[in-house]
Length: 310
Image (cartoon, rainbow, N blue to C red; front, top):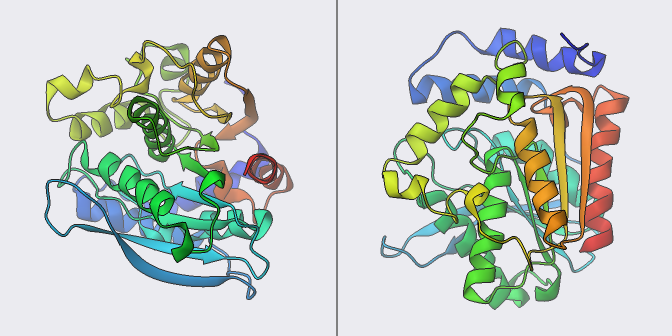
């Protein structure tokens, strides 16, 4: 078994304390809240934070998506839409807060963190509709937040990384909105889970292959969605014309090979892509940046990409 990086110990200890074998959504979400809050740090005082809703089209009349907007004291004009992880079933604006404010602090971009609808109450395509709707609204109403519509990027981790990839494909299919860049951190693309990392790292590293399978079972209630290339970017016939990408994986992670596969396919299609793999690190390594220098360096690399591309 490969050595786990020392910076990951804080994640492992926090997981031991927070998780107690919960199986029901409410209990799992409560454990996630305990876990993420134990690893958080105070926001910098120079950031302006505001919660609001954004109206989006869809099958639910009057539906509005809750978001949290982070603005720097010296905003750059760029905008990063952040989509959190959590297996599509957990995560909210509070658990996402330390990740989102860090992007704003380091890049100067206005960060819009999306509180998309979760499974099992809201299976596919609810989360995708919410996140794509926020992108479309921001592109059509840039003056509301003082952003440049040509400098909107997508950032997602885990489930959020899959949402980012899906939105890039959807925007290409529909001819917009323009996406300046995409960053996927330990993201998934909907493989059949037969790649090596799902076997090598199936257990023992926090996230398990079994939990990944369960997440997709709850997400794709309709078998037809499992076969759709927007729902599962892994199935896309072409990746040509997608935005410049930063694909960031953890070495000791069941979903590691999703990142490797996605990055290689983007490169073959001629997309400007950077692939980075955090050696000895686990799914969720961004949350260790407050206590570990190596984890901080991994997080800083994401921010450097966003500063360069947005």
